[in-house]
Image: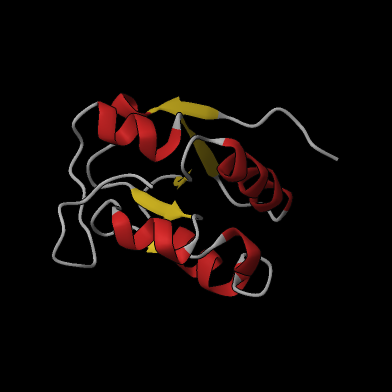
Length: 114
């Protein structure tokens, strides 16, 4: 069952926050937040232990991001069902980029949101 999930604007995400990026590998490679944990949405269930460990190590909630906020909202719903303090980042990486937060790419090109 899908419930209303907690959301936060990009401008309210702390700079040292634990960030989980659930986009696909090509999206991640094009541009992502440095220090984020990358686990594509389709791998969340089988990698739940890794996510739980990241959340346990975090000093605060786990912020979940995708391109625009839809996939991450679904993941937040799932994580909260497993008693994790997870919050959806409203507007996703599109908002992250639009507000000027830093991006890193895996290749030689300038980072961008795919």
